[in-house]
Length: 220
Image 1 (cartoon, rainbow, N blue to C red):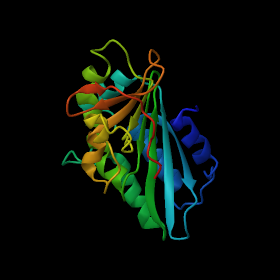
Image 2 (image 1 turned 60 degrees about the vertical axis):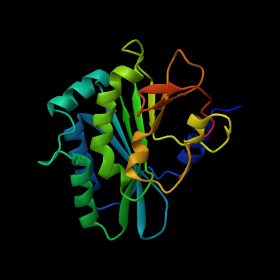
Image 3 (image 1 turned 45 degrees about the horizontal axis):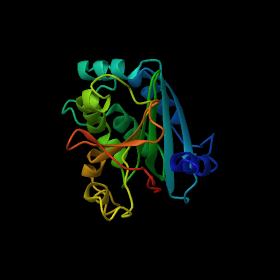
C-alpha cells in the first residue's frame, strides 16, 4: 500500500502554479530569504478569483539543531517586538496590501541539511499566526522527539490527525478532525525516521510516541 503522505503529495503537486502572478512577490521572497537565510520558492494552488493560496518552500543550508540554536538566539526568523509574530507574517501583510485577492499560506516547508519541516494550514491564517510558536515548540521538544538526541527525524509533519479507526486505542482515537483551533498544532506531529519503516506519531503533551500506524494525514 502506498504511503498516504506520498499519495497526497503526488495529487497535490499537480495543481501547483510555478509562476504565480502576484504583485510584490519578488520583494516578499527576498524578505523571507533574508530573514530565514534560505533560498525561497513560492507557488500557488488555483482557487477562485478572490483567493490565492501559497505554497512556500525554504531551502536552508543549516541542519535542524543549528536552526533551532539560531532561532533561540534571535538570529534566524527574527520576530517583532512582542515575540509572537514571524517575519513571514509581516511580509505577507505587505503582500496582501498590494493585491486585491485574499492571500493565505496553504503549506510552509523548511528543507534543511538533515531534516525537513512541513506545516499545513488548518484554518484561515493559521500558519502565519502560529508559525513562530510552532518553531519554538520544535525547539522545546527537540530532545524528546530525537529519541534523547540519538536520531533526527528526516521529516516533521505538522499537524497530523487520525480518523476514528482505532476503537480499542483511546490515545489514537483522540486524534480526530474537528473544528480546528491553534491548539491542534501542538497535539500530534508525524515524524519520519530512517530507522523506522512507517511514520511515528509524537504526542506533545506527554513528550512521547504513540504506538500505532499513521494511516491518514488530513487533506484540507
